[in-house]
Length: 135
Image 1 (cartoon, rainbow, N blue to C red):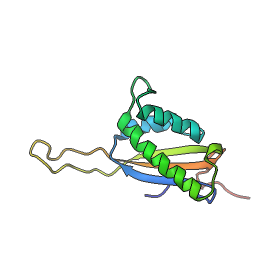
Image 2 (cartoon, rainbow, N blue to C red):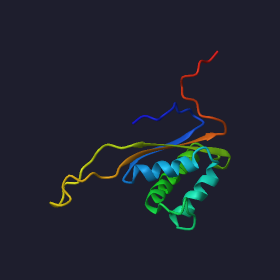
Image 3 (cartoon, rainbow, N blue to C red):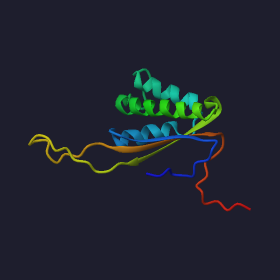
Image 4 (cartoon, rainbow, N blue to C red):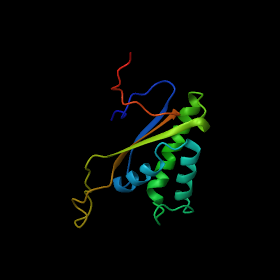
């Protein structure tokens, strides 16, 4: 799984295949995308601890897994000596591979919920798609 846009040295990144619903992860990622990192992390922590709700729901499982991924991202940024307080969060979600449960008779053939999540920290501004023409 490649990143959705080119990664440079001034960015911190993390990606993972998580056992959570694509629908819920997409909703959360749309709400926190392009926010400053401290604000986005505060929102996710509030949802994981059931203190903050989005449209009346907490999404505790999805927000808990995303919070773990954000902590990995923060440690990657510290390893590169980047200041996370001044950076923006860019998050991308895509549907994961189709996996089936092979357990009991009644659960046989049931699809598992899996999605791919990519998280990138960048210093302000927009993220390029890599298709721009440089003069």
